[in-house]
Amino acid sequence: MAENPIVAAVERPQAVAPQEADFDNRNSDWFIDKAVQILVFLGGISAIVFIIGIFVFITKEGAGFLFADLDIVEFFTSPRWRPTSEHNPTYGILALVVGTASVTGLAMVVAIPFSLGAAIYIAEFATGKTREFLKVLVELLAAIPSVVWGFIGLTIMNPLIIQVFDVPVGLNVLNAGVILGLMAAPIMTSIAEDALNAVPDRYREAAEAMGATRWQVTIRAVLPAAKNGLLGAVLLGVGRGFGETMAVLMATGHSINLPSSVFDSVRALTATIAAELGETAVGSNHYMALFTIGIFLFVITFIINLTADLIVRGVRKG
Amino acid sequence: MCLRKLSFVALAAIVTGLGTVAEARTVIQNKGSDTLVNVAQAWAEEYRKVDADVAVAVTGGGSGTGIAAMINGTVDIANASRKMKEKEINLAKERGQNPIEHVVGYDALAVFIHQDNPLDEVTIEQLAEIYGEDGATENWGDLGIEVPGCKDNTMVLVSRQNNSGTYAYFRKAVLGKARDYKLGTRDMHGSKDVVDLVEKTPCAIGYSGLAYATDHIKMPCVSKTAGDSCVAPSVQSASDGSYPIARPLLMYTNGEPEGAVKAYLDWILSDTGQCIIQKKGYAPIRDVACN
Image (cartoon, rainbow over all chains, first blue to last red; front, side, top):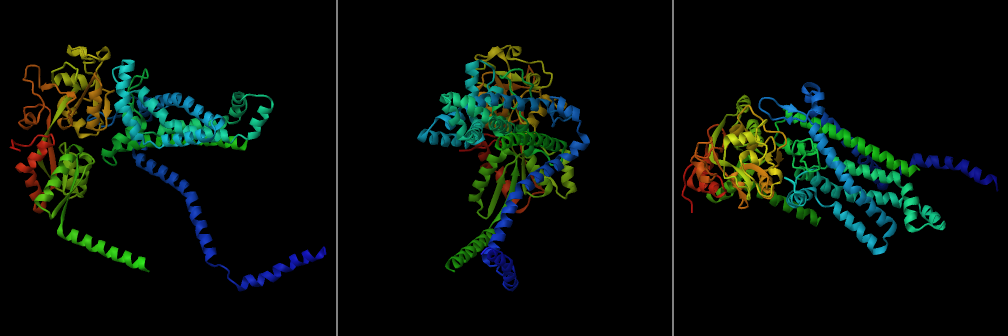
């Protein structure tokens, strides 16, 4: 009894081995299996290939300027971006960096309360139809094209800001910040909601068992447990803000300016590339300087997204 | 089987179809200036009625794009709202092209202000102080006017992105070659955006092609210096050369035009062609009677 299976296990390979040598059982299923394997593998590594490809491409296009004519100190400390001047072209992106940062900063001030509030409501309080309806609505909001947002900024927000705040021009940090905040909020809401849903129900049950109210459960138990995920959501929103182009091109006023208040017009890094690259002679210093801005943007968004990813991963492991 | 047969038939039909089109038609490639693109399209459409065997393919992209295509020899006609630079002409000649310039119309660059702005006339010198680097004019009070609805009389400068033909022409014509724009102008992406912004901003001043003007915007007349007569921007004043900031609209051909290209250009310069450009808000090269 006890010996039988062992004998069988030892003998079976011997019995099977000649079979394998005799019969090639690679039928069509086997080939389909292999083909799909290869396809999926290619799909899996394509993201890496593309990222590396893009980085190599923008570096190559910007290299002639980056390593030859670029005065790195002037590039980062001068606000004078005047690449098409006839007699004295200057390449300073300080005003553009400050512009992007100020708009993104204000956008986060607008978006964080909205998106976290919405995420907490959807994940913790809303039920049934309300919840499904809100989720669809948030996704719809994320689908509005950025040029439409920009158009709203240019034609509706501009006169509104002039009237309400009695300022000379309505295309400014405030306008772009609000628009960008509304644009980033849906994505942040979705990711924050995922983070809240990832908190195991036993946390909530334990807190309720101890007599906590719904609000206390959310504030004391769920939010602390989801804080890494929420931070990740905020950082992805920041990344979105840095990378957004069309809306900020139209709503900031596209003016080279170091802002002293939210009512000053500014200009963003991305918008500068979008507005100027189209008509720039390929290979000129102006062209390569724009690609150098591209490298700078790439590095910044890469760092932000990587940080966000590491933080979100942190919460999954914990 | 059936499906395969069907698709084969369809393919054959497409191929023969393409064949007949390519046989019957000469295609003229026309590319360049966004200022001219609307007119160029109108010309191309109208010309189809004149000569059905010639198709004109029009694309925009800007004067720079058109000129680059001319240098590379990939277009028959390049549209430009600025003259080719000497560097560009030399480059084209190195590559075996010989760009010939044809003036097909004129464009008045109008100065745009808000409807409520009391400014009626402005001189080129004043414009230079308004737009030029280190210019003395910082607000509307410096011009001696009070703009209703404009906080602190601040002047909101509206300009174009720094590689547009309009931006370059305005700089040359108003600021002079050696001077740059002030930093902090709002650089709009397209003439339409300039008009949109100025329309809704009492403090604003901007410039763009006359063709983009609307009824909700005011255009002061422009004089060269304080003593000169002040000329309002119009198709008429751009055409007769009395308006001081009008620029020629150009088409470049590779070598003296011949064949279909020559016929097309001749038609553009005829009364019919010139009436079309006038209807689109630009100035014809001479007086034409249009109905």
